[in-house]
Structure formats: structure tokens, C-alpha cells
Length: 119
Image 1 (spheres, one colour):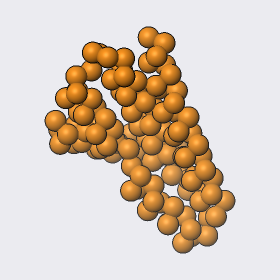
Image 2: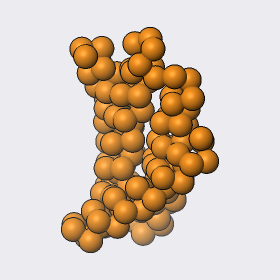
Image 3: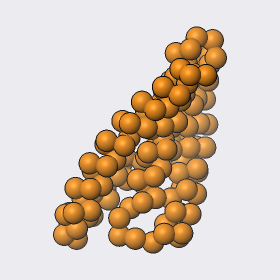
């Protein structure tokens, strides 16, 4: 289940990043940034559903969180892109990318979990 979910998440990440980069080419890595924020939101939703009791079996929780979200989010790409920004001297984008990814990722995870509590 983890492998299947990871494969599907990786394909979704690739498609999203390519679409965003083609739609809005920019030195700031918006494709990876948006995928990471969306992935954080989704993992919040999935864990929020799992906390509600019997809405997700343990197998579905693993498939969705470790599989789909693990394949979809891209913090290894995040690290590489930050090194690239540093090497190219784009220190403003480097700092902005790190700060916004961490702050908005945590906020999106919280929002996803809070949203599921309302349902």
C-alpha cells in the first residue's frame, strides 16, 4: 500500500510541478513550494480523518499519509533547490522559501486537521 501510494503521489507531484513551472516560470521554485503546502494540508486532512475514529482504517491511513503524501511532498527537492538558490546568490529567495515553506506548511497541516474536526 505504501509503495502504490508513493508511486501515485510521485506522479502527482511531477505533474503538478511541471504544470506550475510551465504556467509561471520564475526563479523562485513555486512548483515545489505549492506541492509542499498542499501535501502538508492533505496530510492534516488525512490524520484529522483518522483521529475521528472509524473513518479511515489503519491501512487507508498508511496508504494516504505515508504513501500518497510521502510520495507527493518534496522536501528533498526543497533542500536541493535551497542549495541552488544559495549557490546562485539568490539569498532573498533562499530565506523567503525556507520561512514561507515552514510557516505555511505547519499552518496548512493545522488547517487540514481543524477542518476535519468540523465535519
